[in-house]
Length: 329
Image 1 (cartoon, rainbow, N blue to C red):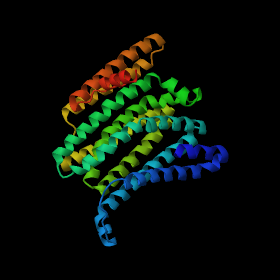
Image 2: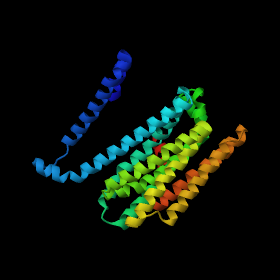
Image 3: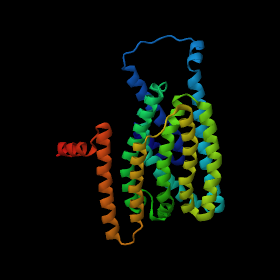
């Protein structure tokens, strides 16, 4: 509904249609949510303002902390773009932005879907550190096993994908993306630990740790771009989340004895090796050798990921895909 109503606004009003379109999309989302909730049979309770404030105190603290973290992220992005514009060009800003969108938007879909289930599960077992550790390890394994084949495919066909979504003028973004992909995985690794602190409602501690992380990472990203342009920025995009991982990992382990198990670390190491091989193979100049080697690596990774998902969670994506194809025929 948002699409059907939003596109005509852009068509007839141009740039002036941006704000009305955003409002229409939000209203349609709220309307459908309201409609679906109204179909649920539940008992309404009258709660006083005093009870509301008392009951939502911790949630409000967490909300303020998360809003602050979102602000830090936006501020960081703004400063990096401003730095690139100052020491590079507006064209470089556009190329960098295209790379960021490819990383955060398209692969973010998988992470958003996983986190929708992960957050409630972590809050439900926040009182039990052993269960927290179990859920956290399951989450990070699932995230890596579902992300890495997608990332592998993306690395193989990166120039083609950029050409389809943008134009060949944006191919320079590959210099950033080849490294930033690994930074994305480190962020996933760190964020799964971060949720432990959020579930424990340590909002103040989360805000302090992320502030330290941003203070360290922004100069690091500046330095990376200053030394080696978009490629240096990509390398810095690997190093900066490592700071976050070390900070949060050490605190979570020390305070709650929650950590990644040896089997999880081995599994993630194997998956990163697959991605590293794919990245190195993608640099081969001979197209035939490159695509044959990449295809073999990708196929091996898909089977490995499917085997681990089946072993850990009884999820067989290959069998499911075959069943769907058979049903369509």
